[in-house]
Length: 553
Image 1 (cartoon, rainbow, N blue to C red):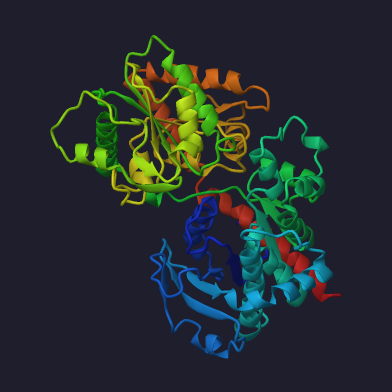
Image 2: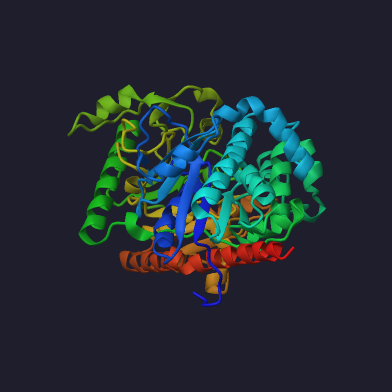
């Protein structure tokens, strides 16, 4: 760490995903916590929404002794907070905020935001109210804590995503001595353009964020995001890819890029790694045999794609198109199973599949109905993945060595079929494919290489661009990560590239595969938090120096 960097004594890190596992931001904030806990003189306090209230939150342990004097002095009757510890490595201190008391005042709060920062809340819908009132309530909590506990110490507030933007704006107005950081993990308008099937990249320089927000009905989210970005001391994002997007659509240059790191404590080693990998392969292959009524070879190549249900943005459509092309390859001499581990509107585990799996030594020669899905859905015929599988003919058991299996549930250890968590399933894969169209960073390919699983990603993922910069050239699968060059117009070309890469990989011998696996792990080691944390220190320094300037005004 540079000796001349100014660091805070108190860091308030705000996210809707603190003690609330939703997506990638949870991984960012939670895995970084232990690294920050080791920084001498830094008191990090995480703040999130109290969504569990009377129910037990397995990620949070309340401690009524923690800051008890401050909590008793919190005279705001509309605010309720619980203090305790986040049950992750490092057990950081947490304040959970029940923001619902201020819901009745939302119109007045929105009026203030308009008058102070020109935030347009007129078009808010869905989760907008909850997020904005959460942000406002958190601002009031930090204000009270700073005045009664921190007092004159150096402090920084880091707000993640537009859901926390209101907190950063509140602090900017009411605690000008506190440095503010806003981190957008994906712009709301960029994601909307991509999700609505519009060509984000071919006409990138022609897009106006405000105009597109109105067209796509995301004006209010875009407004708070944009105004927060323009008013905080330090504006950050997670990749050079999204930095370019912010400059075009939010009209504000990024001050610091904060790449997403991780810790390796969830990756087993030695005999434990070998054992977990063997178990995962056996369980997953057995389930496929029960579904399809076919015997799968022990040397089957297991390919995985996981993440959020976004057909185009996450490249699920392109993945399936590549699997369709793979079925036409005549030279395959081993079975290939492609797993799509993407949570959807799941009902329950399939009874017919569970009955078969309960038959320990049984073998089957007839497929189940819909032999491509492990769980029942509430909306099977409308589900995007199911529709794509059927339209591409990937639902047929017709002698092909390529099988596609859709696992539409959270792999949390109690799904009813595999009963293992995501990482314990992931470790059994031989290759992963994440052909994203819109991916500000990309934790899923990073997690894969951490488990020594070679991966295919794209130049439209922040992680893919980072790999290219690390290697000094375009990544190839022999490097551990292949980075394909996606555009708005080369969908089928990239499908063929993925198909050919899989065929080549499937034909490689064990020695060559082991070498690729080792290279994948080495790339993962370059993305540990100890490698990226200096960027956060730079952001804290930037925010504090801007706050220092205000003291002289």
